[in-house]
Length: 127
Picture 1 (cartoon, one colour):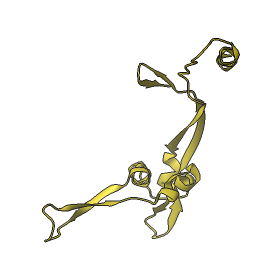
Picture 2 (cartoon, rainbow, N blue to C red):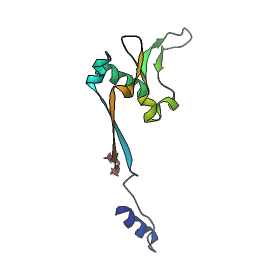
Picture 3 (cartoon, helix red, strand yellow):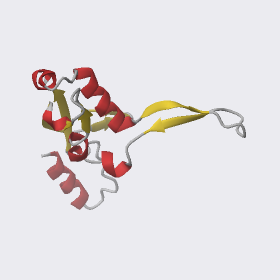
Picture 4 (cartoon, helix red, strand yellow):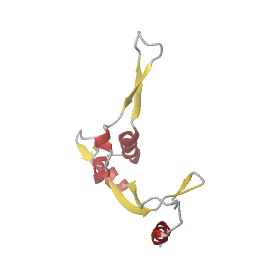
């Protein structure tokens, strides 16, 4: 209904500015660990969470001690942008199992998609 009202304002002569505080609908992805499935594969929920966190944001792997630099240089491990830009890519991240075999993250998680609207009011974002 709000979109219809916005359209009316945009087509009304004399209206010079139509402000819109609601972004287009977005999808929220909730990936929850299936504790039973993870346990069957010998994987802890913490391992699943850590893998997803590293996949999305990277992790600090240490410092490079370069004698030609004033300060040590942080080493960060992170997936390439193309490998972390889609939910399918993240769901296919591989987890090592105790048997030295790897399993996809989607095998031990449940993915829930929820449509959300995001609004900006006074420069703060709300869902």
